[in-house]
Length: 197
Image (cartoon, rainbow, N blue to C red):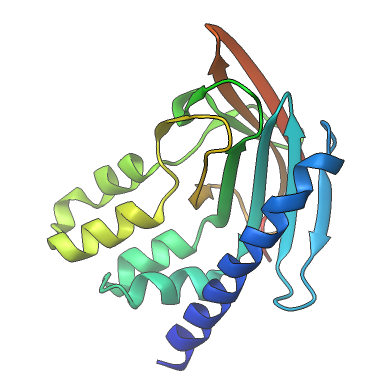
């Protein structure tokens, strides 16, 4: 119970800080990756902006991810499996002057000195867990907590949700995020992100 309460407090404070940081970050990035650690939460963040599209990852610890899912009624085995991957809160925002559309199937993460990997989406997780037959509230809570698989953003639109990466704790990786705009495919890269230890 104490872990669950801790995770909810941390996630609530962290979500509140996102709104503030999203208001100013993109103006100073312009293609480079900025790494920072919150004095309030101790969580590490990586952010970048390329061609008017802002992308940010903030670490979620194993304990926080596990407690978050348990607090929503998920069974312990499934919550442990989810928390055993590298879990991040992800934010994508369209700061350009035209609509964009993205699909996670076109994104890749690249563990350093390795080959590009497909991201784990909520559909991948639910397919793995399908035999467990989650009840509707658990399934809905999980789906709504995850980063949308595809979405269209008008200028100024943004969204957030959890993304997961199957690599060992402490590993570093890059994320190539892609979007369509005006019939063309663009991409940006968030570099040297570290999985929590």
